[in-house]
Length: 151
Length: 151
Image 1 (cartoon, chains in turn green, brown):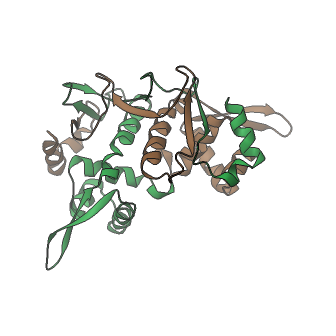
Image 2 (spheres, chains in turn red, cyan):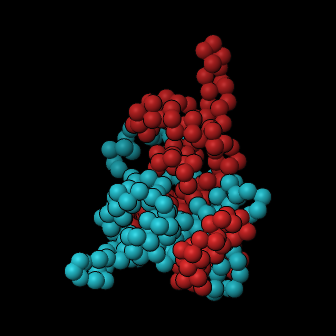
């Protein structure tokens, strides 16, 4: 999780999905301090969610453009947005709606099991150690206990 | 997004989904400073993702238990985990797998359109102002422009 820094990061990404590409536009939309924005953009470039593409020389200026890795984060934003709509939105309703051109409906993101398509809920899903689980951690008694509780 | 604080917050929630309930267990699992953990737990209680349930008196001690709002965040964690597995995991594979008891498969979370069940991607989805979009913001020219670009 650490790569994302703080919660400004998804907000910066959301602006990128709106089509924002230039530093000044990000700054204007987010009302964020320039040095904070600069730091978050650099982090996103460093983590390869955004890339800097020059659009002018002398002085050189860049667009910040989503990479494939950054574009794939859209699904995470959609999941967060739906959770926010469910639990945080006022009685007016959702601040943002997702319109799915493909099916023609206003919609929201729904997180389902990639196998059966049913919603993934904590009641019928267990998190287990995967092949990439760090070996040294897997040996720790509290880690063993934690996963044993999961079933 | 602000309510979540920093990225420790989802990590604390993840531990809660593993079945962790006590301060000392969170502390042991996360290797986090006690004052940082205390702050994150208080924030999650304040935002009603966790609630404090006393399990002992003199001295009073609490379990930190997921509320419905907290449990519903599971889908967001599943979406983040899948993105991480796709883009961040080493060649060993995913550190954590989700096992769906309901269908019996090891799986992962997939974010789909709540209407048609197809994946929601930025190419065929537009974010639009919803009914709860703040009226004063909707009037700002840069906000109008941003949404006009979306289609």
